[in-house]
Length: 416
Image (cartoon, rainbow, N blue to C red; front, side):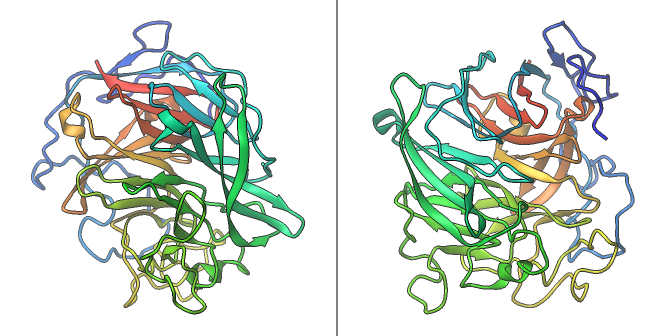
């Protein structure tokens, strides 16, 4: 059960100091070194028992040792006025563009002022896990004012993950010319596992994540290359497959597929130095994954997994490794329910450079993963005392991190 919202957080020893002002500012004291040498790591941050006795494929694949941020930082609740926010991104002027699950789009300043809902978006099915989902602005937004978003599209034969685009009007009150550019077929009469994240690559094309729609009858489609379910997709701004995709031009295979064998991908981000695409996806009971995406690879769901069914039974044959299927870089058991992610590329907090930050829903914290040579070498949990379901997180142009929660909060996290 989620605890009642409190604007002043409970003190967490060795993590953050108590409330410093009625405005919701919080400050952490200077800590110990965050060196990630194996002889200097703290105890793993996960202390609960796993759901299974499955063994990792390699050392450090789960329950890595803890680290602690040494640079003093603070966080602030900027706003509590959002309604089930789901996706967050930044406009060129630094303001934040935020989707709300029920179908509204809002603009927030970095001081927390919210716009009225922006009109002109297509109808969404907000039942279950559906709604208005991930969002990004065109790399040329300053010239064309184009916005791209993902949503659950209600159709006569079911629902599906769809991608749309439109122009933000000059007065910022409406989206003009909203057009659906891609539909992840087949449709299904369910309301779970839409995926829904979206990012632009360096060439101005889009990566989109989809889910396998959860149910046993749709789950196998994550392994099927003639289905868009349970995939990471690579499309142009017109919704067409990008030439050079791994299955482009192959019969009976979707040319838009970039990778497959995914359960429900709700985090997508590019590493700021390597340019590699990383993702987070939900496992069942246990088995949440962090993956470095490689074109054409099979990431295993639902043939291999470190999770079990909610009933306690094994998933399929209960195997965790298989030739031809990729291992997660990192996995969680029990789950934290990882949602939106971002890499930190700033310089204000040096030990965060190139770290991956993960919004955690059931875990109610922001996970910080230290990554070196494509391996997780340390983990920290931030804002755990806030007891919030962190839905998405992004890095601002001002070097701060901005996060949104299911309860409607907008946070900033920045150097003190």
